[in-house]
Length: 179
Image: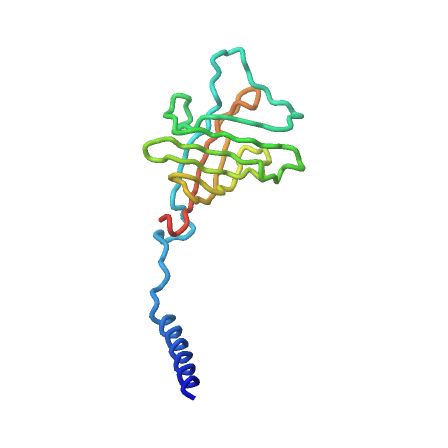
């Protein structure tokens, strides 16, 4: 009989403690930003074409290319003389059956006093327009666990059509613990 009384008291105390904890627990943390749709960090930078030492060497794009590998410079402004912030590197397979491939990633690497780290941008929906909205799927360093949107817009187009400067706008959100 004593065992049943102890068991009932233990169950009653457990139920009571769960009910009290649900009423007395603190409220969830609110976002630091008043507007949840507003990005926590917004960056605007430019992707410059590499400058070759010889003016006679012109890169050409083949229409039957199976993969596009690039290594460009990230700058603060649209001019070639703007301050370098990092690098933009990527590997894109434009073939239709690889259009949604996980291999189509653009890596943005930053090395400045303010930002040090990298961002991974997934290029699943490349449609070769003058403006592309791609997804930021993660980052390292100053951009650890970042998610968001990367908008690429072509700023100028040279005569052969492949040597263009791109304006890149990043809108990044971080997990609550990172803030």
